[in-house]
Image (tube, rainbow, N blue to C red; front, side):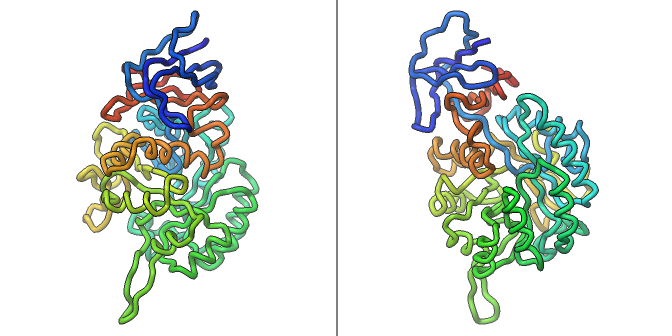
Length: 384
């Protein structure tokens, strides 16, 4: 069936198209045209003057809808992804936080099974840890971090085909060899929960750490040791021109001033937006099951309020937060879709509204709330 979406502002790689339509057939974008005349036989969708934008690419989320990917069940995976789909995330990289390797093996099996389904939103697996600096890992990773073990990570990589990203602390012994190995396998390596300074970041980048997870969070900035001053991880990443970053733009993990600074210094093409969401995201305010964590002020905190523990944001939250911070909507949409698609290597079919790409489309109203979602041409939500 041919579907035609008309009467909306369409965001394309060339900018906004104020009068036009998007044609969908067989899960693909047949055409993005500046003509909005009705096509005989097409199912017509009237966007009523709202924004027609590419589906968001969720490259870092641990859970949602009351579930966490570490449950390692098909039900949990599907529930989380469906919950985020309702908020515009049409492409997904399930993220497993620090876990025993027995669970990582289970997760790869489930992920590979889901990826085989026609039109699946699952693009691959993202692993965070367990090779994290214990000083920077935080209470939520207590007892779940360990030294880099070449045998175990190679065994997992050699026996799976779905891992697309792995985060680690580059200062750990063996971490640079870990990065070199993953780079050869075409896997994105990201630095995370680290206290590396400039020389360490430079070496990490050369080894293969090309991305910075949840930038500013779980990493130091400019600081002093006794009477001398040192650059932190933050400044070191800024000085590494081609290193990409991700921002938890929920309005709480980072203030608007820092969001604008990162956008200004790294730019749209090296900055993407992530939720880093936990199980309480898209869960209708239901209580969290983990006694170590509380939900307060729209974020997950450790129960003693000593630290943030993760977000409950969805992709549309990120878009609204960045626009509220004063960043142009078009640039925000690129950071939510095009840039993460390119960083994760799926921009040949995801991240923008273009002919022959997957029909992953979101309609946003003037307040940037999600009103309709198509994933691979299938309508997942329509409230127009």
